[in-house]
Length: 373
Image (cartoon, one colour):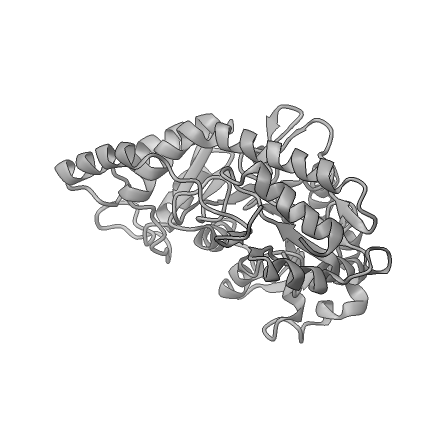
């Protein structure tokens, strides 16, 4: 195929404009833009039903969802988390005056290694915050066992895991809280947005108070809350997205399957496989580049793709532990994060979004196979 417009790592899936316009007319008529309006309430209800969870609260973005979740559980001290994630994971701790402690990841799916987490627990540890990296589930049973044994809270950053199920059950039903992101780059987006999934009505009420300045009534403020409410336009947009998300996920699966066929026999290129009994959402398509076998480094491949107007992303490079804010922490030492350091130097996420054509998949794959088009 001829090179033309850029192919980015992702592209947002948008609902039909004419359908969104009808929702906008309703918003213009009722003149309710925020503060738990009718679309907000409907979206929370339908989203919970779709995800198979009992209680959730939608927020204006995923970062504020993380920050609010930590407040809701009154987390202090130290929290063990991963260096292999987007910086919002640890920024949410920093904003709550919580010290992040990094533990290494496991080499198969790049999630936190439970054994390394258990070894990092100290009297100051109050919680564990794993990330379901690329939407692949963490070791749920082992993390719950560790949390129960040491009396720790367990908060899952599930930003990549919209709609993911394990043995038919929503991945979001594990741990004390799970956090979703609905950023424009995600499988399911509300332009910006996020949600906290909890397991009882009392916790949902506390989260709802916290995301609205702590108001528990017209004149009662019960906590130093924040303004993290989702507005009516985002909620209406989200309702429309629910109509199309299953079709979009099916298209993403077909793209992932096609990449695996195309790249199956490329020496030095490793694609992650699907996990048995997991319903995936195909948020990303990461590949690992073994330069000793492939003949090029990951960065050389990254630059080669860019020459052909293909813009993959090195998620997650550099590690969070390498950024100035965090690199002075004792847990940030590279010798403590051997697997994470290696993966960060090898991984590149290839373009994946519902409208990516098969010709484009072949074009990208041929460059990877041959180093040229």
